[in-house]
Image 1 (tube, rainbow, N blue to C red):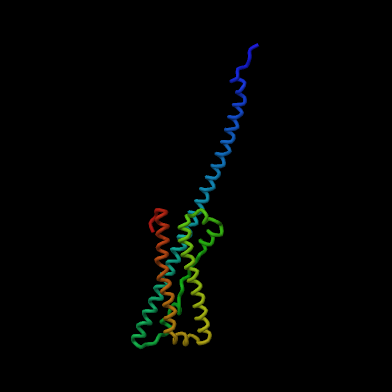
Image 2 (cartoon, rainbow, N blue to C red):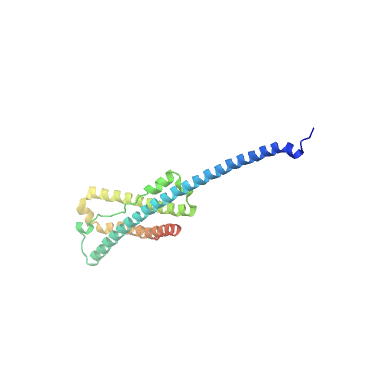
Length: 201
């Protein structure tokens, strides 16, 4: 009777080991593919969020620029009135005694709430958060000044407010100073966005 060779006797075990190897390899590849898909999806969400944030900051910058131009224009008029020993009128403040910019943080808040910022570059997230923190301080200032102006209007009326135009100039100057600081910060972050995306500013 012929005896079975050692190689032939070992072949079932080798085949089982090879099959187990391919099963494990298949599982590992499936996990890697799933992780890759999740990373791609997260990066796409981050890109969409950055597009929204970019547009929001551009819009906010336009509003700040408009408010700065208004405050600078009024301050110029008030300086001319002082030089001519004149008096302001209600028409001097055609768009309001102060005109803080309406800045939003909707896109940034949504990105934080949904965890999309986790897929963004840390340095970029830090720069964005600093700009929005500056915006929040600006809004706090706007609310405080708005409360002062409203209280003065209630107690002194429009004529009293216009008659107090010198102090109004001081308030406007604080807005002008902060708004002038804002613009280069917006520009720096938007330039960073453009450099990363390869798109024009």
